[in-house]
Length: 374
Image (cartoon, rainbow, N blue to C red):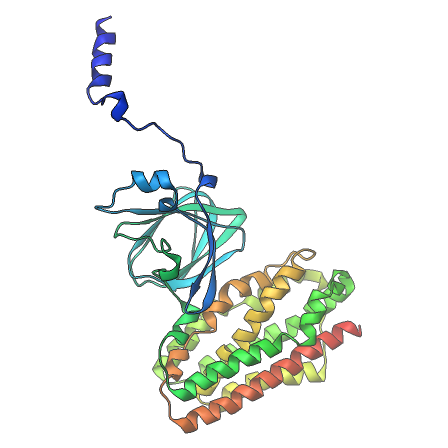
């Protein structure tokens, strides 16, 4: 009895009168409003699911305004991506369930129980992994949450950086033209092929991947040649980093295919693919940057998103998913080195840009033709 009385006293030591006490509540995750997209620099960015604690009235009342902490649930489905970005305040990501990958300044996997510490100004993005993606808590300890006010989100995405500043008119024209080229590229017959459902036919699908293998092998040659024949330090560091991140993708595709892989010889496919590799031996570093990052990486990014959605349902391949994850970041690599050139340099870059998109479109159309006529 004595122990019971002591326990009762202990329990009542911090009790307030019942009329002054708030009731204990359980806030279900589904009860917190979701934010799935945010508009940054007029570009819509996917967030997966973000649930800011302060968007629920009870949690808003509970969290302090002084020594203010911001919390949000974040969720990405398998292969869903939050593009690389930076923000001015440090953030802590506490993994609660599932698997994911961080990309940007580091590339690493994380899972239940892991804590990711992101300093302010660090470039990073996330991809959901495994069978379920992940749920995590995003924590900021310096005031307003990153997306607490979606109209004034405290983030800058990599693909928006080049549109945010006032640049040399020649560089701005280069970007504007590239945006139009990338939109026109979606009309290429290869897009119609992968969205038509015809690649559900295994024979045609194998033919398609055999043709893609030819281009993938050449792309490795392009990156090797560019690194080998570049001496300017800034460009050489950039090109080597890109090569490191792309190295072996063609071998991975061949390994996935196994015995199904067949050698394709076609003079048009060979010539258009080899044109890009040859240009790495003859162009200067700025022109190489335009061809690889503004033409090939942008073209790959546009196509990989479509191919990943339309082919993954009947083909077990990671090839397009890997490129869908990486190409958004690769297409802006090095473009800051093109921002303050002389006008005559931009005239030359605009010419090689036109030639590059022309050759890419011929190559892609030829792949579609080789598959359709097989």
